[in-house]
Picture 1 (cartoon, rainbow, N blue to C red):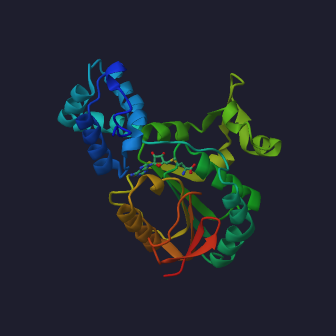
Picture 2: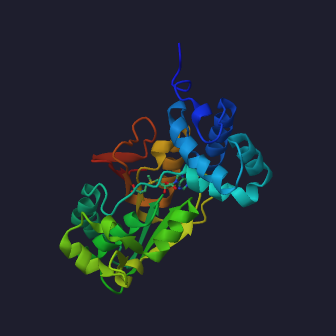
Length: 283
Ligand SMILES: C[S@@+](CC[C@H](N)C(=O)[O-])C[C@H]1O[C@@H](n2cnc3c(N)ncnc32)[C@H](O)[C@@H]1O
């Protein structure tokens, strides 16, 4: 009985990739990123790692893996950058931004009246569209100008962070946004094919490289955390550790936003489920 793995004939591909190669890749990905690469990811893995094999002028996946293991310091970040999936968009899962605007920000404003301080974390922020969307929502809400507001935006992939820091996007990437949003929060780039997030938005966002599996230097507390479409790639024990750590860093009553296909059921009892993948810390 052929399995899914055997259905792909790598002998016809540009470089050979053996099942031992795939196991080594999956092992390294799990160890350094938490990302679980199941059997069904063979084609995806092939396409992504082939880019590195080609770039380094190597002749096989085995040669690449030997190179990677012998030169971890030099090659690991390239390996990580091709392994991560960075799909994102402005105002993705827009109901979260609605909820932020209508409920969370008014509450935060009341609660933090004395300190005038707001701390937000976008964990797994990819190319920055998520934290910039949060910043746009803060401006739309009318967060007072004299408040100390910071959005920490972190990711493991250094390439997406480089793009995020430029705050420059192609016009296609803002295509689906309402005209008013584009006008208010973006300025046209020189070629006409690009736009840049305005400084009044980007001033709130601070990008840092951070591996969610490692130590976190931040002390918190955060008023809310977005960690959307990130843990879906991790196994359940890793998810459990992560959500407990988020609970530690959130203020009591703080909010956690997760991705549309993720949930905390049977994973963490430190949050109440408010529906629509929004959770609130209860202990
Ligand atoms: C699919 S994107 C989600 C982007 C955004 N949160 C959204 O929902 O639009 C997942 C991001 O998680 C990041 N990521 C994966 N493993 C990570 C880890 N161990 N630590 C930090 N970030 C990680 C990836 O680099 C990627 O940019």
